[in-house]
Length: 173
Image 1: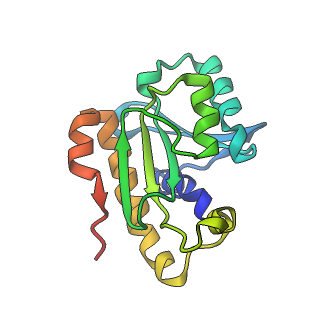
Image 2: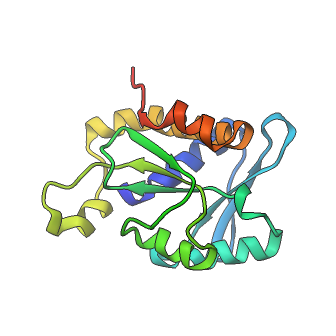
């Protein structure tokens, strides 16, 4: 579904580094090692609006500093085919982000993947839970790849350089 756009990015990273996710109660996770460092990929298995529980569990278990954590989520305020990396901010009405911000505070980097803007604003819930159109599905691999590259860039080069390079439309062939 559109609400799982963040998972598509994590799945792309896992495929690229040839690893599989394993379930651990309320989340599934795996580790990739680009250039020798460890990058943990975590998917909450809770309802979206309880994602903060998973972040709390994972941060407690591994003691990561918040500046080394990035959240990847869908964003219906962004047109399909765009991504936006931000150093922090509000949830923008996204209930999963609101749950996470309730645990971490607002100063947590996030990569938002545009899923399109619903024509009927009263049908937002239906929109985020529906599948991408056939045309959108064709573009998803390139979007996931671009967003995955942005995640690696953020980790290696920092947020400012990554924002200037990746924020905006995904170059789709």
